[in-house]
Amino acid sequence: MNFKKICSALISVYYKDDLDKIVELLRKLGVTIYSTGGTLDFVQNIVDANSVENLTGYPSILGGRVKTLHPKVFGGILSRRDNEADKKDLQTYQIPEIDLIIVDLYPFAETLASGAEHAEIIEKIDIGGVSLIRAAAKNCRDTLIVSSRTQYQALIELLETKNGSSELNDRLRFAAEAFALTTEYDRHIANYFASLFNNETFSLNIAPAKKLRYGENPHQNGTFYGNLNNMFEQISGKEISYNNLLDIDAACALINDFDEPTYAVIKHNNACGCASDPSPVEAWKKALAGDPISAFGGIIITNCMVDRQCAEETGKLFFEIIIAPEYSDEALTILKSKKNRIILKVKSNPRPEQQFRSILNGVLTQETDKITETADNLTVVTKKSPSENEIVDLLFANKLVKHSKSNAIVLAKNKQLIASGVGQTSRVDALKQAIKKAGDFGFSLNGAVMASDAFFPFPDCVEIAANEGITSVVQPGGSIKDQESTDFCNSAGLSMVITGYRHFKH
Image (cartoon, one colour):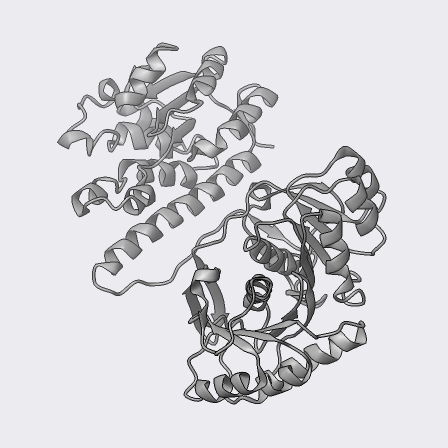
């Protein structure tokens, strides 16, 4: 087990939130505390503490740039407790052993994001803190390192359950988190300096890591790096898989674009059903009607509370996951009747600023597509303008096509996904796929609208759409033959709008 009793601690932190709870607990455990600067003032309001300056014989110098960088500090952290030569050095130079280090780092990334001047950014590059963290993590056989305020609760639980001691596995776990933190910290600094010369390099450090049952297929290993607990509360169900995570990501990205009550069914990262309606249960029924076959085994997401009626209706379908911001108690009782069904309650649904994809011998990065068109983004290019209802449907369809694999066509009517064609090698094939699908489920396309994720290189798609009774079209525009599509729409009595934004999703 390699238990180590914590007899002494060094505390030097930027943020003091909840530190009082730890200091009080250390006092009860009889731990000797060393501290410096503002942290020392904070600690001494609770318990007697020793000044690092008194330990080293040097004051804080260079405006606080040097406080803890001294052999009497680092010797106490790095000394190997079972090494006779180390013990002799400590005795010779009167260096106390330090068993616990609680430190955090200057907020470099936050300062950078605030738009601060170069001089202020430089001052937020932590030197002593990083050195303390690395030293304690290196000597994790004997010392425990707490490198972030996010670990305070874990430290409290450890101290309480083990009566002021730690085991080797505890120290290894905290050390691993410490090295991950300093790696991420240095990445921000390195990228900042590289950006001064337009030479930013790619590096990414995301923790924690969670091994999955397998990857996309059973013969592939899979790992998720991130903290799902920050986004969701898993109320019930089995372990989330690699493919589940891909669909959850697609579902969350899509639902972010809708404000009124909406239900969507996601299958293989695409919406196979989606509808908006003032009545959530009607939104669900309309979403399911779009493709009840593909919906089987899919993922359901909504932006409104799931009540008893919605739970009863969704419960008629076999699905793997449901995601919602709230559930009534009655709804949860119904949904939990299938023990493997994953029920996720959304805590937050932020979209990342950047997207990453491994490719060839490197990585592609891009900004997340955050454009969600409104009526103000629609430019009418035909003699006929779309009606108010058609504009509503055009915007609805355009949201869906943005989140569909390219080449993509979406057909919609009355804020309901009628059918889509996704992942096709030609736009004509995508449209034909959508038309066939609509017919298979008994939908009439008279009065429906069509959305395309990219421009029409030829007028063939609008010709096919007109023959099916589609009355309005939305597309980004930008083809050298845009006018041919516009001319056909004028001759056939269709309205068409362009947005100026392409939404490829490969």
